[in-house]
Length: 247
Image 1 (cartoon, one colour):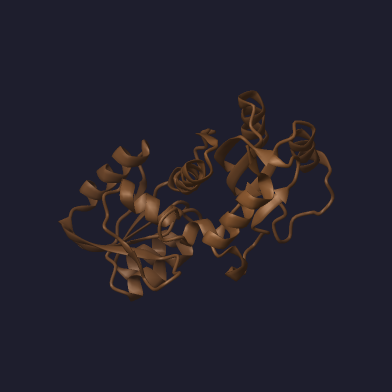
Image 2 (image 1 turned 45 degrees about the vertical axis):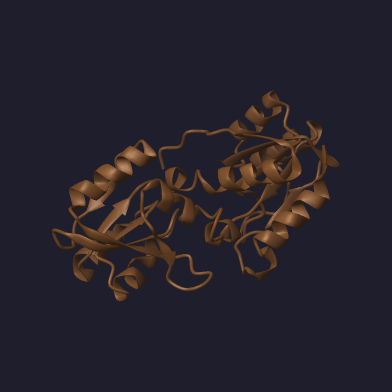
């Protein structure tokens, strides 16, 4: 068993969590116990994931999407109240890291997605959420196939770039807004999770391919990497539980 606050303090330091101006608090969000023997990780702290963590006998739940977002209603009522009550009554603490987990150079979602796609990528700048890699001129069809093979789902491809892709950028989740920045640094293709109505027009006018690979699908890997690192460092058990999400 590992003291909860020592585990969280290590995560806060390693992820440099205090340096991010985020949409939600990072770190310990719900304190329901003092020690962690089994850590369950998952993408989003939904009721389904909480129920699975309860069944697994978890002491803490590590997620990318937690609670208390900016603009979110504050009272612990309704769906939010039921989720928090389930955690507390079952002695499961909730730990969440959003942007710090996207940006981390080793455990981050962008680094982890790049590895699964076989892309030797680097961030645009230190701490940047936009990553990029060079390619030998892959066709858009080859890239779509690579994404489908790695993530288990076919991406939505919005064509707009050349027949051969030599530079590709990516940012996981709901980062379709980075498409202009990707084009500005010379990317001929860009991968993210979600897509907006205007993205199709942007891809065509900016001259690059856009691949919407799924918000959930592109962000399954950071929590797994961090959870495994915690297991190895502190000698606790770790289990990733995937709650399928088509978005």
